[in-house]
Length: 428
Ligand code: UDP
Image (cartoon, rainbow, N blue to C red; front, side, top):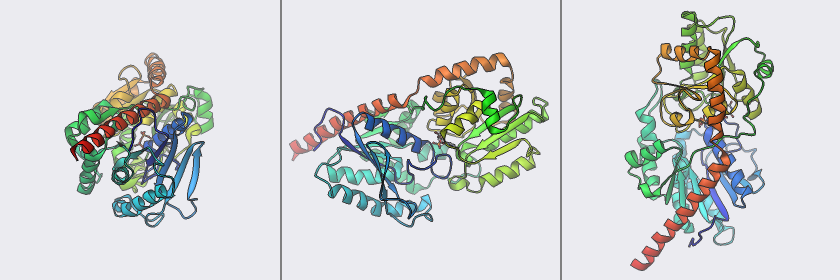
């Protein structure tokens, strides 16, 4: 039984549907992968060993890979490799759980002190592991079906009932729930009836070593963009929920209102297809043609951090037009590079962007309002003010802080878990 009031020694971290070793920005790989990789690495630096369990998606993957010193990624066989859609994963949870339990059983008793599940699919596995191992279960939802379904984009498929039910079970079962923002904590309590005493808010971070202000001229030269261009960028998984189409419509609006010079306007769309939006990159290209701005829009594949930092630096503004975001790492990364963000006034973006200080929040998705917000940034004074504000705002977020807060949540979970166990013992 867990009886520590100190950080755990070894954590089993569950990430069933996506691996922290994958390149984020396409498919199922996004902010959660970055979150896991960054916090696991920092936990290991603080002496906590981390083992991440994720589903093997290729026969080429080794059974175990090292993500960083002290962080192992275990590739679990559960269903066919490449051909399994996320919607088919619930049927593979038994196979996945069996492999996780077997791994622990092959080690000395009490091998893992705590299990931390990311996303509801992993929560289902963590629930059983927690019961079997007698350790606390900490769960981070990252997104919530009921919140997502309340803000569906056109063309988006609602999250199935199956997920809502599974998510509710995990909320009920977890010893501790970690929310990305106060708004998400509120959603857990209001929409899932979570016990407020179990919910901790831990803000995600940003890698301030990678995402730094730099020369805009150099960044533009790296990307083959003229130094005097007007550049707007969208970065992220291409799916209806992220609404990259809003930026395209706004660019067309800027041109039709004469607020931008066609020969100088560049719209960058960086990222790959994701989930139900698999058709979306082609649809976006068709939209660009339909709007008559195909000469202005450039599509780039998902990029690793250093190249992404150049995209952020090259841009006059980064647009985050999502219908909803649990947080929005892209917004903070762009600001850390000194680029103001224009984002929708929803969810975690209200925390990630300080409206009027580090960027602009736009209510809704009207092309006219988005075009006007982007046009406002052509004023050099406002741009310089927001750019300085952006760097300052981003400094408030750090993965070190996130990791320390997570460890605090682990310790509180262990205490709560022990109390429940003690009460159960007394009752029997
Ligand atoms: N990302 C990346 N390369 C890309 C596009 C995105 O590495 O080409 C990363 C980006 O740096 C960020 C993450 O993917 O850390 C996206 O996180 P965010 O919270 O913005 O969105 P999510 O994918 O979680 O919905």
